[in-house]
Image (cartoon, rainbow, N blue to C red; front, side, top):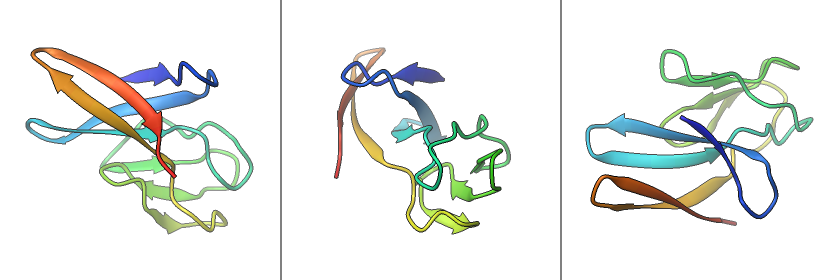
Length: 88
């Protein structure tokens, strides 16, 4: 699911890498600030310069980006997910 950071309006992907486990990752590539493509085969790929990130962790796997995608806190309350702050 794609949503936005309420503080900045930046795109954020909320993903479920495993049943009951959720992660929230910035959809903005740290290399040139392009929005990465939707997750496919466990990867997030930047269409601008082909940086590749792990969809479960946001870790950089390939390309010109030198860091992974920023993470956000995320909590589950019943059947609702709440996006937290961007983590440094």
